[in-house]
Length: 156
Image 1 (spheres, one colour):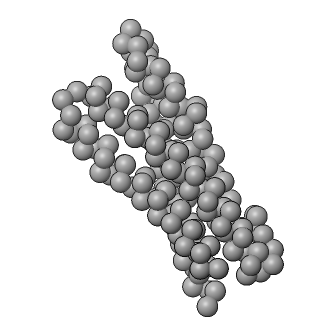
Image 2: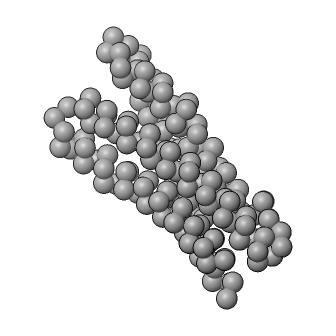
């Protein structure tokens, strides 16, 4: 059971820690020190893609480990536990961002002719939605941290 706890905690640390580092350290620093916003945007785009994949893998690891933990402890999977619902929402938000919003933002950024006032407005709107989704993933993740701490606190 300790291996399953370890995997659940590691998955949360990687995913939530990655989002916190990206949002509060990396992205602001890049836009502050790199000479152009295009260069900073290129680095942010590549980094965000890696962050999304880390999150998707971490989410699957957490779900599998948590379901197995429930099976060992309670002899049932409990797939509709609140932490599992939160992880599924986090995965959905991440998938939407990675495969829906990010490709369109990348397309807009790659063609300077498109980045007129209409293209810029679309990009800004997509950026707002991207930020909202990442914020939603972060808030849900913090909720899972609390639920997991309570869960492990009650297991002794």
